[in-house]
Length: 316
Length: 316
Image (cartoon, rainbow over all chains, first blue to last red; front, top):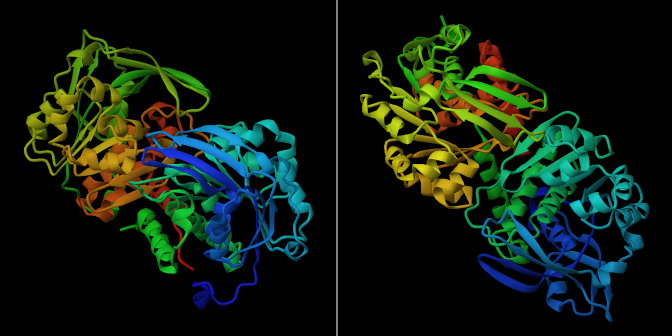
């Protein structure tokens, strides 16, 4: 049983995560890893699993995907019925190098492998998923997922520069079906063609998603709806070991909290942004998915409260 | 009488501002101004004057400084006894162009004129100033000011890349005498040689100032002491007309609030950062000093509360 279940009772919400599963080779100033398990769906699922279980995962790996990767997902209460394993294929691989200033990274190589022909098939028991998290994949595939789901309560979507530039009209078609778009500041500027982030969010809201979250890395995140702007602080980290997956851990924590509480009110959206930020902060403290492997309820709550202390001030 | 005086009673704190007075020629995507009154001391004084009056100003202008500039300062209750007017000289001039993305600006020209030989002389009645605000000027001059002041309660200092690179050892000598150093993120990284801002602040605290404020423009500000990190949000502005002076308005609002309340507690430092942010947000809404010309107590309080709303969240 999930530790939070003792406190918050039974959960009726189901979370479906669709995205990439990868083997990442990452260099940072503090060390490197080779073929570590990763991918957007891996990080989103792991983070969300601290709030709602089981997480429903749809993705694809090759026969080379390590058993330890499957064991990690199972350990995080992730249902693997939607995982396609193509025995004769190779898993998607990504390699990146982070600079001394961890805000800057170079992609060393990308090998799509089995991901190139990924065709997300939603198992029939997942078709009634209340919350759908679309990881950063081709917007055509994102839409294909949504076509298979019966009236989800909430659709959360991530995207990236690559799709904004190469598949803009397909992305715009997908955005019409989205409730929450999570993107970083440079992506928001690129998508909206507007340097001012508040205006950018307004432009993007006009494309469909009512709720925009702009991640700003070391500067925190903005949550923007038609009614409010909420500015979430960044956790003051002196030691970021590996930024890989932080954005996905954010999305997973955000989705997980909303799913668990079954509450889309503005006050609760703010909390979800803080839980997302908390999971992202745990993620970057260790290499790969290690930071999301064995957190406790108390740790997550403590970090939530640290975020509150960080930004709290009172009138005298 | 100052409008706040009704509410908060008599003020015993005196604020001394030393810095540049300038004629600014500024181009932004929204318009341009020529030879508008400006300079660090102008913006710091104007912002601080909403909290403590009279502000004591030490600076230098040429005979070409417009009477309207002096009238503006007098209208803001700035005591001009320390203002040197060199009739035969020309006022310091600065010209800059802001890009469509207002985070980027080019300096078009700088003419030091009378500022080149500025030798700050503190009038005897200013020598017992409780709070000293050192605008962004040569660290040798900053130190010369402090040598003339009797045990100030608080010394606040601004600096910039130019002095960090060209007068590093002189700046380090000045920093030993400073309580609060206000600088932007790139300056903090340059001074500390550390890309991580939390570590950078720790390094800079080792140079003398116990309180570090790192301004991050559209991303807000960090306040860092030995006991805490406080993350202040940025005001979500859709329309920034002219970013000139925002950093100085921040310093003035910060100093003004601390001076008025005569309270250096951590809780009050946080409030001061928010008042500083509020004054900076008013500053950039209009060209030049216009945004600081006729605010009311209610406007400043309202904006303070807007900042609180912007970052407030509660546990459920």
